[in-house]
Each structure stands twice: as structure tokens, then as C-alpha cells.
Length: 168
Image (cartoon, rainbow, N blue to C red; front, side, top):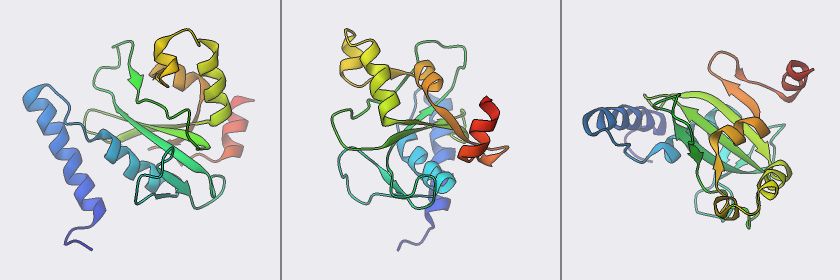
């Protein structure tokens, strides 16, 4: 184990990434690693030590217990900018759901969404002719439509029953 805790290192990485973007106008490119840390903490996931293919973490508690989860992260610097996309989805590999961690300009999580594999496959099949969809790319707007909000800073972890009650 290192001298610093992972939490302290991620906190410093957030600060450095925000400062770098402020100084250069370009993202530092570590939002994926920060998103993995945040998703693991918020949703009770265990991150995979090595690249295992189609997923980044496995759930340790219900409702995600033993689920294989792909984690994507996206820092939102301009909410009015259209056409934002999430990272490429590994459609040809084994996983159960995709978690998307949206972060603000300080790389702090603002919302976590989750979509099940069958819903994602169905959504990508709808527009098969698009080259982007063939590669497993999806717009941020489309992912928000097909997924559920599973965590917010205000509410914390939103369990399945509260999501169902909110949509009724």
C-alpha cells in the first residue's frame, strides 16, 4: 500500500484535472479513472484489478451483487453543448450493465445513471445503420433516456424501489 489513500489521491487528481483544463482549455484525460472510483464508492462496487474484458467492476451488495458493470465517465463543462457522447461501449463482450458517472467542471460527481445490457443492445439496434452505433458509441442524451438515475449528491444511493415509485 502506498503512502497516500486512494481517496486522497483521487481528490488531488480532481483538483489537478480542473486546474489543467482552466490553464490549457483541454481536459487532462483522467475522467474515466475518477468515474470508476466514484461509482465504486457510491454503488458498492469492487473494481477489477486487471482488465477483464467487458467490465470494470463487480457489485458487492444488492441490487448489483455479482453484476459485471462497465463504468463510463463524462465531465460536463458546457451543459448547452449538444452532441456529447459517452465512451465506446464494449457490446461484443460480457457485462450486465453500464454505469455513467456525470461530473461537473471540478470533476465532482453530479449524477450516476445505470442502464441494463438488454436496454442498451435494443437502443443500439434501433439505429443499426449508423457507423457510430456499430462501434458501440452512444450520445449522452440517448443514454440518459434509456437509463435510470441511481445516485445523486443530494439523495445518495437511490434504490430500485424508490426509482420505481418516482416513475409511477
